[in-house]
Length: 282
Image (cartoon, rainbow, N blue to C red; front, side):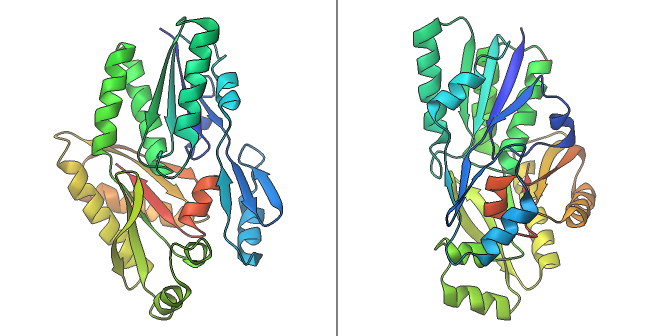
């Protein structure tokens, strides 16, 4: 059976995924900074976007794709289609994809299987889920078995991130101005994680390096509780490739990893991770 994996644009694509466009495609969200509207697709310019965010007094916003955008993506030549989306608690992309699936069935019948996966995560979490679904497809598992395995993986997925810059959190109202200034003066770096589809603070550290190590230690420890064999991970970085490579090396010291992939943050992930941020998902 042929298959296709479709993500929203918060599924940051690794180099291998970018080179495998017969398997992977994405449906873009729209980014809004003041009066500027940016489509989060192949034309996205991260450097320009970061400058826009920095110069703006208000925080960036996102708009989810319309169901019609997903419906167009379903025309791909594939028997089985898997849609990997941002957490439904932070975005309407999951609902839009579900509406599009129902529209497709009404118009075309059940000529192909379409499964929509709410990752309860985003960024590296979506990347890891896209890779996981491909691994199962390559094993030749039936559609329903893959969907059950994906649902189980979502419940076990560990997504953590460390921020270098907290200005975006302040501008979007997720962190008060006083708290942001206090944290900056003390060089405090938050360690955040995805919990049931919401972003929560796990811990803090007094430097980026300490925060990254703490993040990796905890993420690996939690992931090991669900896996008896080698682990797999996805790392997404926002404008800091050397930092991502250092995190990859440290993860290899902590556990037996089958593979660790690195991707550059696209538009939505750039908002969440901020300049210099690192996100990992295992």
